[in-house]
Amino acid sequence: MRDDPDVLVMSDGARVVARRPTKPEISALLANLQRGDVVIVERIVEEESGDWYMQVLMGEDNTFQLEYRDGAPTEHYQTRTVSREKVVAAVLGWVKGQCHVA
Image 1 (cartoon, rainbow, N blue to C red):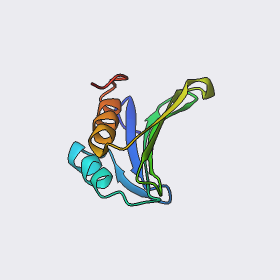
Image 2 (tube, rainbow, N blue to C red):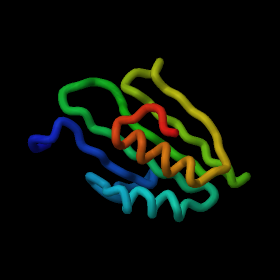
Image 3 (tube, helix red, strand yellow):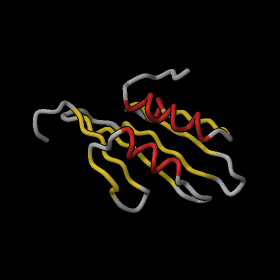
Image 4 (cartoon, helix red, strand yellow):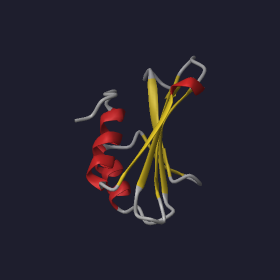
């Protein structure tokens, strides 16, 4: 993994969509979510055990389920919203390392 301390990888649950995704790439994929679709943005942290990711699932009822994990299983959180704008803001905030997005 080059000189970067961590690397972001974005997938649709089945395949990698982008390595080191940009803000426009993340926003576009989230803007085009359809019922049943998932987007996962994972932070690969070199030389540390654990999982760091933000996952968004668009439900059949047009709600978005957001989950994020901050390393350990005890640091796994989730919420639901109907706002696509809040989903985009939350994922982009997480990518920038901000845990609480206004």
